[in-house]
Length: 321
Length: 181
Image (cartoon, rainbow over all chains, first blue to last red; front, side, top):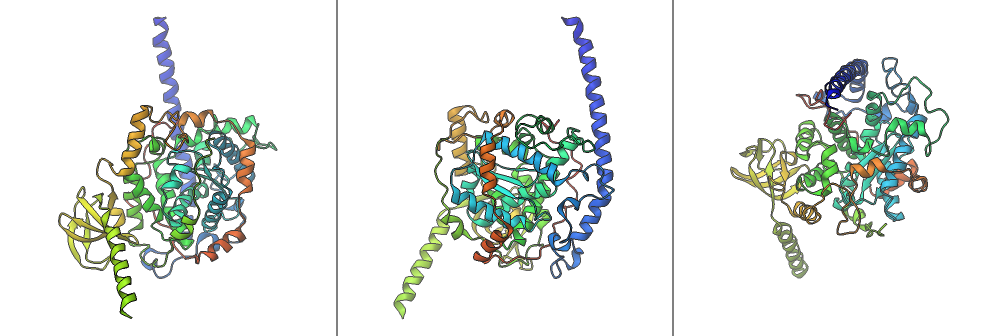
């Protein structure tokens, strides 16, 4: 038995070394491909820092109103991400969403679900992708978490919803998840792993459900939701969440308030085990968001929290499903 | 004339008392200047040092009114995290106790007090597609028009807000998080 061990180890080491080299190379290529386009996007979406307070730029959705969503990133400099159609993105997303709902069904409360969809859709209208079929839901899970899947699916757990104090906090949380969809963070992870071969017509005319091709792309079940994104993607989603909530007319301090609350929860608590595994520590997120916000949102004085409207929607007890 | 005023005063005072009754503590996440008023141009009344233990008195927009070792005043909300260093607030203790009593934190096999399970990595990996539930979720989606009407009912007026730049020094280019493949 033992004589095979060194050979096996050598093979393993070689394989992982090659894997690492290849991954690094791919990442470099992606970064190189993305860089010019990102710079252009920044230029387009932000005004010069000096006059930021007085003359905020147009929200991105209004600056490019006529552009169909699928065209938003189809620059020739983006070969890696440009070719996924919104339809394919939606197929991947609905497979992930359907799997997630298989693990945790919706809270059986039509009024609550409708309310969350209205808040979410209004916040999503402020994003660069207002035309997606945005679908929001509160799911039966006691721990504190929220999930986004490509194509416009956003789910928040019962545990997180129960922690919220007002509509501005809900808007901030949903805004963070909308940010992941807007920036296609999960699609980028899939592509980095080369599970998603954009060039091929892999997805074809299949629909989500029993499609082995789509399932092969996303891995086992909804595991992509447990894998987490890069820290930088989470920080970016925090910044987007704050901005989208503010654009929607809410108090921009909703999401920071929720992060404050998360920071006060014991790290050892089971209610945050998965959340803290897949996200940077709340302290780190607060610090990063604080740096980004600085005094930039001080001009917003009349952001609404809508605590009353939020409290009118009671979160029903679990049906024990 | 005086009586309604008195009632109002009593009401305001008791509300204030209620607000102040729950003493909340926090820890400074970074050094910051403590201001006399909740705005940037207000005069400084003290310096907050990273790690300072503070008492949170009230909140206003993006500002917290605090009592710190070097003085009392206002600091930016994101300079302070709520709870104490170890995270032993009521919510934290509750979660911690629940985790301890089952002794199986994070396995997803825990039934919490409300009878709803947590969602673990294993649950997600083993998840099976639920077409009916997905259809239900999609049926709850609302149109853009419905969202606009909802916003208008809540007097939510769209604001022009520029995207937030990534802070420097950048936090990008970090190694991917553990657990990624």
